[in-house]
Image 1 (cartoon, rainbow, N blue to C red):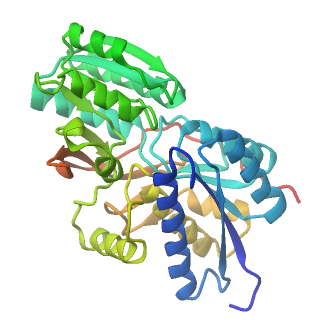
Image 2: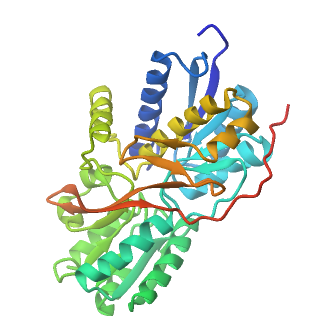
Image 3: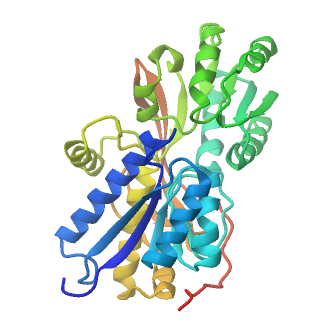
Length: 376
């Protein structure tokens, strides 16, 4: 690898309320890049990973993205957990910087830009599968929607309302709060008095912990209520009191209980290199980041060049035969992935897979044929 290195930028929350997720992303990216470099690099060039801490602050994320594009001149940017952080990165990286951006987190969908690819699940892969399954298996018909007040919960709840209504159910309440809200007693009282059978939660850290505690203290699950939180996985299960989340359902592209040989070996390599609390999970965006890095590598190899237009052309139909949770492939024109999905449930403090849903399409809009070139 005698040529100059190719620069890859990562913006992730290594400090602040989402640090337990962002640290896992930084770990995973380092592991993947190191393994690629050890195998000879990419087109004979070493990958140089430049990781920036967005500190769970969108203003910081925007500044770090600008630094990566304008200062470091990276070929591609990865990262972001909150949807608002994606938008903060998008401004300097994509709108101004005309740089390829791969967003790895499960999110509300509807991102449509020639320079952005998304490698986590979207509502068609989560809500549209989970809601009918839950209503069939639990006979639940009434739902309450406590939510953080930003784009992801608003779009998710629109999809939930449609799915619940289509299957004969009803939404009995819907409330929105700042992400750091801590006193949910009024909403919990409304949940209890409404007779809601399901709480479909889209509150997020740091507000999710006090919400789940107050819901538990009110006796919601003790009376037979069900909790759904699509992003919930092993990181959250290990951080929150087990009794607060027992029985909770989620729907993601991977759980550590998925036992195909590749997923098992990948998890073992991660745990051996990064033992501790920052777990390799789907809700953290680590699985989407793995797919994003490997799909980008596959696109570069197919293109035979790092030229952005050629890479985007190849990335539009890129696929990986193996990944966390199974194979994945870009749906041509949509810039989103067809991938395996799973329904998980907290049982005895552990995430268990209760249903393997198979490969599900993202059902996102087809992108414009336009492809933006980088500024010289």
